[in-house]
Length: 552
Image (tube, rainbow, N blue to C red; front, side, top):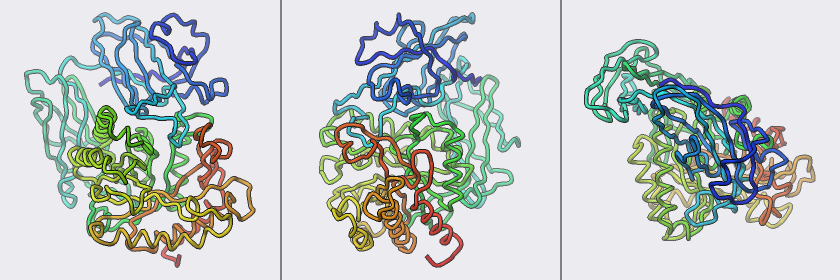
């Protein structure tokens, strides 16, 4: 499929508050905005809620597709002033197919992005979420020219024999037509057996020439290309197998010890449209520290992020959008349907990325309630249906009161001993190790003993420059992080730890903001501009000693 970038400078107009559809068609468009971008990362729109209207022209003819890799919070798309599609899934990729006149001409593309909160139970983004709701067309936009029939949509590549380098490929087409299609196939540019495509899904098996395994230590990628007379598609993949059971996570048969961070894909100057160069710099910094694991927070990650992790050998927990959702949402049928849909589509889109180790959902939901079980069960079933090669998990802060841990393949606990449960400014640290040991013993007994266990969050806030040694100081954070990381690395029951969080991030600016100095979540080991705190230096020392086999 021919692909054209629609990124760049678009016409722009911001309308504060809610507006009917007809208000957006006759705007003066006196300003401009860059795509990808978040308009309210700019000071003139920061904190305002309304509709950001983007406009640009494009030339095309025939069967085309406009692909959006992600918008926040919600968007409606118009072509030549007619509504062509919409999305209520923030950060979620979506596409709009168009049948334009056969003679190429100019068309108007208009995207109305809503930044107002939808507080209904069915909404996927609420004002109480503990990360700031920047808005805009935050990820790239592309125009694809499509064949009339036999559109190659995606490849689903599964390793069937790791030692032999054998893969099974599901070749998914839309509008396949009535006649079979011949397709040439190439792995790493080397021709392999051609296939005949019939119907919407064709399965084929290949042996990879010069096969090499993918691992964090040796992240070797292969590429599969499928080409018909009218279309072509290609995807990178890695030869690796994930296992879970007997209380351990394994990769290619070897036990994993995960150590790394949760990371929000945001920056105070760019919102959720973080430049690729900065994303890559973040990942290199994590990798160079000796870490091997990132938990994406708390939404689908960008294609650039995942591709970079593939190449760098960083293992990823990717999760669909949710945060602390209330019981009323868990009872809402529309909310449940949206959760299932976005999770299934996330897996289909990102299935081939070898970096992805875990699929997650519903961070810190009310899993101490029986009400939560039907949706968690449905989401676990969705993961198993869409991808039986990876485990399903959800991060819980309910600890021993959680009623749904039996449904997860991996037990993932968000724990904050010495911080959330300790009012004293100086005496919280002695409680950390006993609390972690207590939870390790809890997940080692009864029905949970065979499930891998991860500390999915832990940390403490630190305001840069506070060296008092008390809560909120850099020393307190560094000491707590040291205790937690040493515990995770020494404890054979624990498969890994992801610290909350990589860098400070903007969060809500009202209500609970009194708990957030500067309106930031200050639990980053780096500040929002990636300047290291004491905890980053301590983490570097511990992890490098661990990787070098030294006493920790």
